[in-house]
Image 1 (cartoon, rainbow, N blue to C red):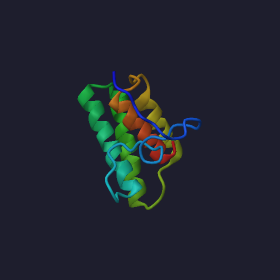
Image 2 (cartoon, helix red, strand yellow; image 1 turned 180 degrees about the vertical axis):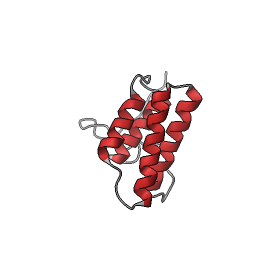
Image 3 (cartoon, rainbow, N blue to C red; image 1 turned 135 degrees about the vertical axis):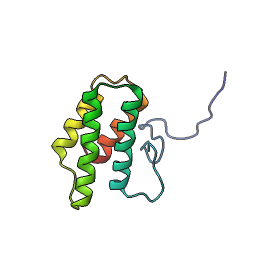
Image 4 (cartoon, one colour; image 1 turned 135 degrees about the horizontal axis):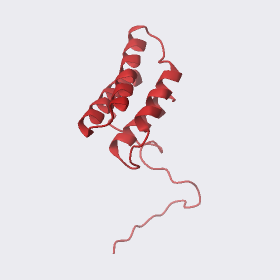
Length: 112
């Protein structure tokens, strides 16, 4: 059995990763908008690969399209559309799955 030697404050909340943030697929210096678009495309690809329901795949494609349009028009993505897309995508995904983690990271990144 292994032991861990911890010589810090154990009274406060745990902080793990980069100052308490777990970054999924973060590339150094990547703008948030570009990162969100890349993660949305990866999410759509994962859903297709996993054989997800067409409704979820369509929602991921809609999210990717909204992010692309927002970038072209130099505006923030429409929050209601982002939220609806992510809700549709995450419906029924297994807890702890990589696809769910990716969708949750997108939600955090986009504020949805």
